[in-house]
Length: 325
Image (tube, rainbow, N blue to C red; front, side, top):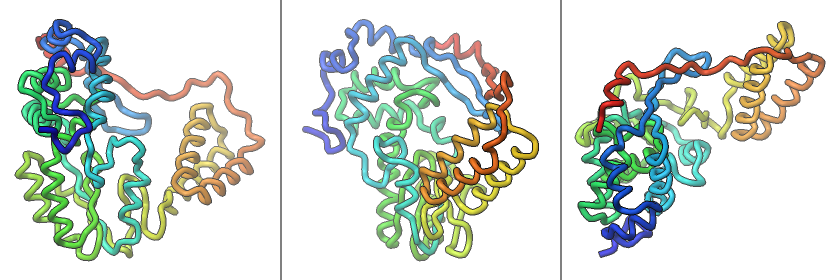
């Protein structure tokens, strides 16, 4: 029986898996049994932030296989229209547009999303959504999970996460439809909008908890039309834009650079931020770009300055990662 989620017929043949991954069965099994040895975990902290982000960082043949699983298997899954994170052609702009002009916007952030998608959930998703045999599902699970969970920083993780929470999506979508609300899923951010969208919070959190996830009360945002409405970092009160506050901050930064000078790194960062504004709202971006050219046109960039870089550190449990078979 062909499943309804994928363009592939059920994946039950090891020969077919060999063709999709470009490795013979012995190599696939050998790498799957030793998948933990291919990870080089580290933590990264972006310039100007305090929070460290963990990256599991797959390497070598395992990463090659994961890229092929992504291209040849996971990208064949027909995800529902409300799931946008990680989907080809979708963007935070498209995610925001769904909720534009709504009286109430509610955004719920699932806590520790990837770490709480276990190898069991991944295995079940391979069987349910792709019709994999138990053997194939087991191999794919070993190749795309790490320490009994979905790894952060692997090519397969976002789409595998989407696939693993399809039943959660179905329940929340049905709840939203019954209340006449719009809903989108962007990885661990779930947004509801419409009249009385705030009334969905209790039932939505209960469903999310029942599926093995937690929601922090600090990560539930309720935004009325009279306040700043924002989804996936995009303000949407009247139109999709970068927001007045962000534009004002950038203008003040430009004026500060005019007084104090600007380094090569700062210039590159400023240019990137202006490009982002222009992508979100062309009229805002053009005006900001013109302002920057006017204010900084005679400013000589510092030569030979060291650009600030992200900070990296090895994980504290590095030895445990290395010992995993």
